[in-house]
Image 1: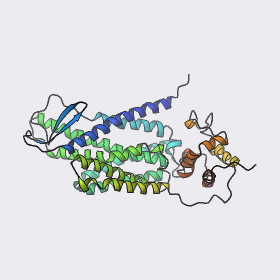
Image 2: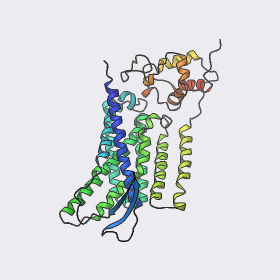
Image 3: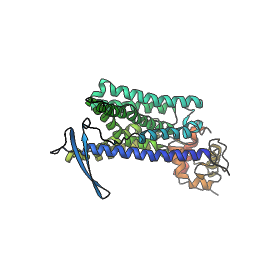
Image 4: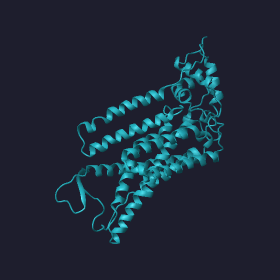
Length: 399
């Protein structure tokens, strides 16, 4: 019995990552909704800023928010932190399996920097660490005192890291790393700010001290950041399945647009939950749609190139695919990172090439995501020739 150990490890870590991610995002979205849905009413207890009535699952729920904390701590207090922690832990584990173990194929792009695997892994970890450090410093600086200025600075920081990652790693890995950096910022907010501040408030109450209201304000600021960053980071984390997003030299602009689109969409929900009406909730979707059109146009743009006036033959196409692609796409892959052909696609005949023409166009010609790390040295001319043949309808050779 042969067990594909790494495949099973990737599957289990991915399953855990998705499960804990859903739990974290779900609780985050709920509490932001709850906070924004609070309304001031008469006869509220002392220290309560507002309450919210909800109905779900056949029952009614009544929630109240204390601006600092209640006069007396309840016997049972529910904390929400492990969802975030295990989302990050499982994500780092999955990155280790997919991108560190197979660094030569998935992480390193020798046309950008000819890293040794250990160097690429060290650079990856440094990006993750410095992403959080710079973000936290900005939040704690005078720039963090004004919401609009802070939002702009965080946006510029993420785009700058995106540009740097795209200069160092493969496009696929760079996009995923942007998601990992933003996710690390979000988890850092929970681990270093939100939970410690809440624990200090609880400790002050138990000791009979007056809690500092600034602790709650700071925690709410970081929680709001997490809320606005969630939609962009979700797309970044699944971007490896969509090569239309990466592969261009200007992919940093695509990341910038993803940040804007996700933030605008999230702003609509936050505003509507807060009771906004009219123009306050009418501009977000048109703006998001317009930005999406710009993103699609930029991602689809390819500089003009000529592969020659004469189409290459089907035999030439098959020769290119078998020279550049069968190290992975074969019955017995020669590439050590694969035990079987990815997607069970084996380029052993021109019929298989024709059947997968659309995939080849996206993965090989447009995004240049394949061959992985271009380890087989496919040339730009070969990509152009393949693209011209596919766009011409993949014609049969003249008899």
